[in-house]
Length: 113
Image (cartoon, rainbow, N blue to C red; front, side, top):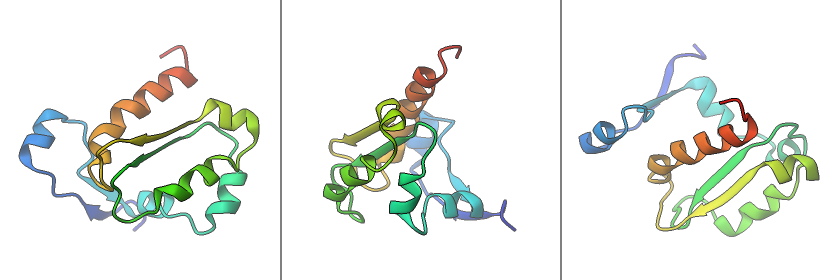
């Protein structure tokens, strides 16, 4: 059942119309991937660039703790990665902006795109 829908986001219709690529649901696998079981160990083992985007108004996480995780991967990986606090965004509203920023990061990582 790992590819079954686990979480559905009930965005307003205007949000989905504005961005038809916006994910309206995630699978069990993605939900598990977004919830690390040993975050310090897992970040330290990162072997590829990543994008970590957090809203300045996140209601679930203490965003002051995020920079420490960004410092855990090897310096080469860290320098290629993106860490940004998005002003005015909450835990879920950050998803409305994240897609554009992740797309830009992928283009930086893979210049052929």
